[in-house]
Length: 180
Image 1 (tube, rainbow, N blue to C red):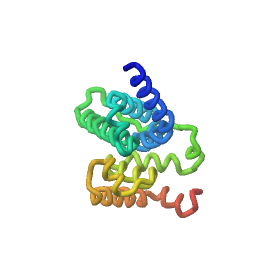
Image 2 (image 1 turned 120 degrees about the horizontal axis):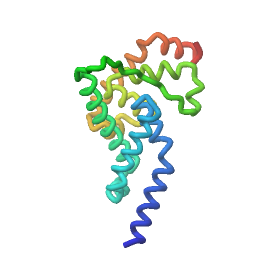
Image 3 (image 1 turned 60 degrees about the horizontal axis):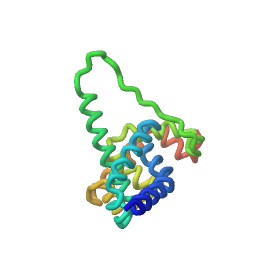
Image 4 (image 1 turned 180 degrees about the horizontal axis):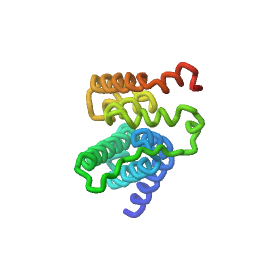
């Protein structure tokens, strides 16, 4: 009994070590800030650890974990939206902060603009754009991860890309090869 538990723990640990950078990148693009991304990945991995036997038996454990992460992000976003819409007594405003992760993308001049633009997209459009064009998933894989139809993925991705293309600073960056 103890050996199976140790084997399962070692298998889970190997999964986490191997997938952490990719999960963090996806979470960062979904949330728009480093600390929120870390919290999202950590809470996702807590959920996954409890059900690791089932997750490990899945055809694509990484896709399973990504789906759990997207669902957790959607729940948090709905909760934040309810909090935002609730009347506030203190008159505080929500500030969007973009974290510096120290990865190669931080060197791009248009990183700040891109992250702000992604954060401004509605959650489903942001998920579709990040999964399709950043994670390079197929439409079918994206639909499975988002829990929707391929048509919904196409629609959300197209609308998200159209909104991103409508942002002048991003259009300028693309037109000039990433340089303004």
